[in-house]
Length: 280
Image 1: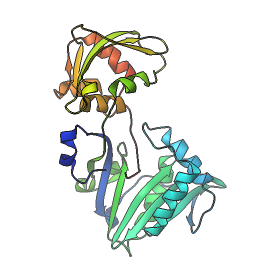
Image 2: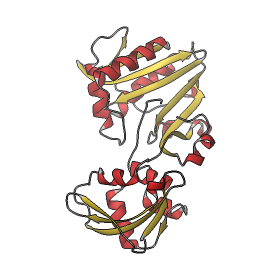
Image 3: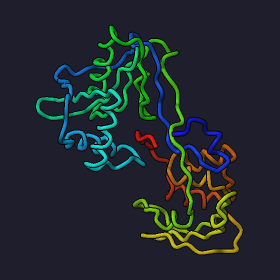
């Protein structure tokens, strides 16, 4: 997560993760219907992260590019979180865990660090819990997932927040990245010629023919005219699935010379719903 993107842009890093940023008076927080059968329990200490891990893994099935957390990652994450005055609550329907919220009360702010839920009613229960701290906190701070729609319930549109560029990345070895690319089931087969350019890594200045088969992509050097031309930043955004080929072509970031090639590339590098909550 860069403090200032301009430091990294000359090195062709680019944003591949976004979030929805909320900063609003806690008293103004609105939300949808709450399920009163949900019980929230504060977590005072923890030795077994199974409930957290299972909820996280289930929630992440809706997203792309998330970090897989082992027991070790959970332990390290929790140690840092608690040392930074973190607090946690888990939601239950009966005996079944259905979500958790990690948060901090810093000064006059109630800051949601991470929220995982099986449905909107669980999320709304957490938001009601947050608003109940209005006597101690003046405002809510929350970097929610990019597709969060909580703002649809807000009375004041000035509190609806905005898209927030969160994390940048850069592909170092484009050829290897393509070799390791997993193929979606039902993708189209065919050939594409791509011209890639890179201002810093000479080996990424390549003209490649991608022969897309049923189970793998065969890559070969070629002297054919390119169907698609892009720099390494655009390729990184496509590879991570943050933007679609159509969006980047419309923005003038990618040059597309063959509509058929565009369909083939869009099939193997589709737009995804990205999520990450680690700070590197």
